[in-house]
Amino acid sequence: MLASVHVDPVLSILVVLSIGIILISFIFKLLKQPSIIAYILVGVLMGPHGLQLITDESLISNLGSFGLVLLLFFIGMEISLPRLIANWRIPVLGTLIQVAFSLLVVWGAGIFLGWPMHRVIVLGFVISLSSSAIVINYLQDKKIIDSRFGQNIIGILLVQDILVVPMLVLLNYLSGGAVSNLDILKQVMGGLIILGIMIWVLRKKEIRLPFEKHIRKDHEIQVFIAFAFCFGFSLLTAFFGLSSALGAFVAGIIVAKVRETAWVHSSLHAFRIVFVALFFVSVGMLIDLNFLVNNLGTVSVMVLLAFITNNFINAVIVRFLGENWPDSLYTGAILAQIGEFSFILGATAYYIGLISEHTYLLIISTISVTLIVSPFWMLMVRKTIGAKDPET
Image (cartoon, rainbow, N blue to C red; front, side, top):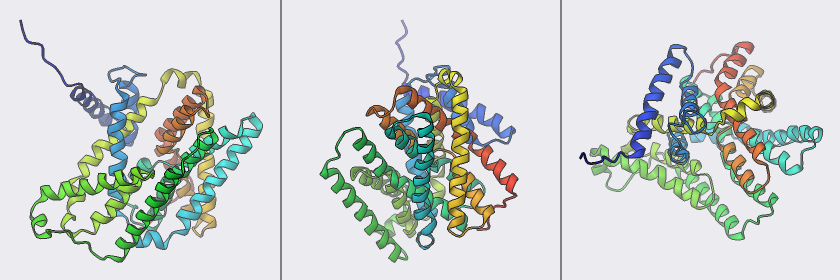
């Protein structure tokens, strides 16, 4: 008798996903459509609500979370911290005003539909966050990430990521769960530590590592140093109750100033592509096709309202803070979709009892569809207003 051969399920999943991504991405390339949509469709088709070729959602979700961390790490390496700080008004004031207006719009709809206040707050928070993965990929594809326009958008995304923490704290309060003083103290301490590191990095023209002569000659060690910074800082901020993506961003800023690791960006680019793709596959796996079909009208209305509301609010705020109308409307279009951190807010609200399962599935479907439709919305607004890509 032949001995039974044990096949690692992780390898099987990666092979199936790779074949699916190759086939669907090839079709989308021929149609000149973004690869991100192909990744989401792979998740829909192969996930538990599709052909059920892959049912281990947690594995793909965990791998996808690495994609977000690596994405923010690379952005930290590319961002100009002095320019980001110099243009702080639009990211900080704009984001705070945008969240407030999102809550106001949902509150208005809630009065008409008879929603309780806790549902208004949950949905207001959910639609106020944009997708770092979608937006950053778009800015990079258009080669405008280094422009003032691109830097403002990156700043808005970072402020949104930071605001996720107080949003989660408020949701816990609304559910009746108390946040301990220790947790609040940890978050304050973590924020101060990150602020101190940012000030220190800002004052340094170049950062030198111990044993730099040996490190300079060993590219393998340089890769592991970069990974240690990326995931080490992610763990640090997560330990203090802050966003792990924020820690990766700070790590990227530090690595960019270390002379010995200047080549790391191009060397690790392939890792970023793989894990970001897995993130969007995990998004596709969350989409329940039966629920989406049965509630297509409601989801379509919510998606349209999300795009119009986010586009309008962001455009008006950016215009009010000094930008011209074409750039303001273009900025609004780029930030119009609902972001990946909104999945976390929706799941948290569901598990602590603030929203029903139906509302949670509605949130998941709406977020997912906005991510798929987002590239087409950006293109439509861009052509309608005749906006041109800003110069770097």
